[in-house]
Length: 122
Image 1 (cartoon, rainbow, N blue to C red):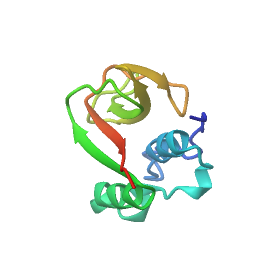
Image 2 (spheres, rainbow, N blue to C red):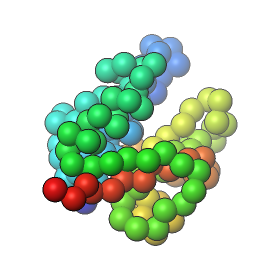
Image 3 (cartoon, rainbow, N blue to C red):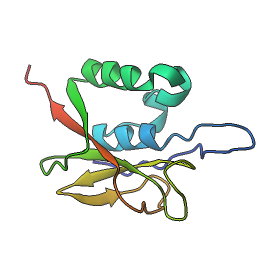
Image 4 (cartoon, rainbow, N blue to C red):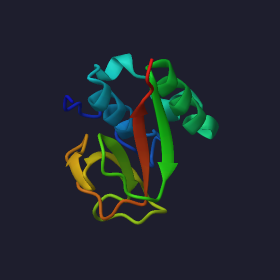
């Protein structure tokens, strides 16, 4: 896994969607940020579908759950420190139920849900 930092931060003024999820996926897949789509900008109403489809094209399955996963790398999503769930959510890379990378170096208060990532056997 490489540590990829996000380049776009959420902005209420400009209504920009941050790319922390994109940075987490790039980190786990050992890719450059530019080689991964910005899921929230591609199609905001269907971003999970775009994420699942992209991961499948890379040979991975992804499952969303509130359950903690211990094996491999996962993506945890929760409110950043100083924010509530309604204000913002931030994606981080987790492994063994611990946060191991935050693309903007900001901690999250807790993990609300997880994306478990599994390699599909060829």
